[in-house]
Length: 225
Image 1: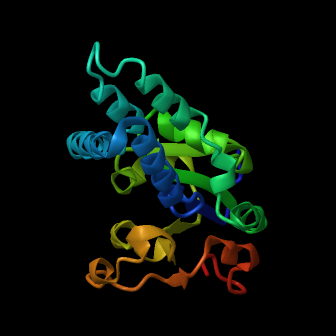
Image 2: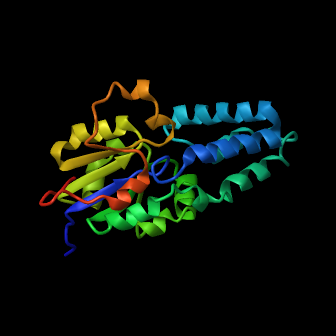
Image 3: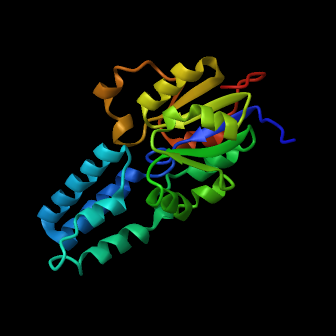
């Protein structure tokens, strides 16, 4: 039988381990250079339409939604190639891999991400993050609604959730209570939205950067922090 670890670390990806704001800024620049300012604006309209409809970011779907047969057929493959061949490893936050390595000393780190079923796993693998967690990657539309599945797949005596979205940390804390330690990483536009975050209670621990977890250790005799 597999031994149940003392801790399972649930690590978010976008703006927690991976600088997704940087990817979006690079994409905006490429869109403007390829399709012009209007094309860039239209792409993000399609992107938001799809996210509202499906509940997750769909970068490649937004490219397809831009398609106007006979007008831009020759331009869109370059955009798809930009997304698929993006240098993901270069956008991993400094210290993120060291943090994962340190957490392996204290439990089992896994990736728990929201996202689509095509581009998000491609990005996670290309960034080297899937290999860093021994391919333990879980991607859902709304991960905060999948806690029972997560418990079955990754049983633990205690969970530690690391995320840049205080709303998600709050939802999981409300569901699991003392069984989870919430760690808020203040990276990216969601984390730095002071007004938006003011409505949520404080997490168990706040870090300024993911690299700070490279030195984290649990309190002596405690399952959590």
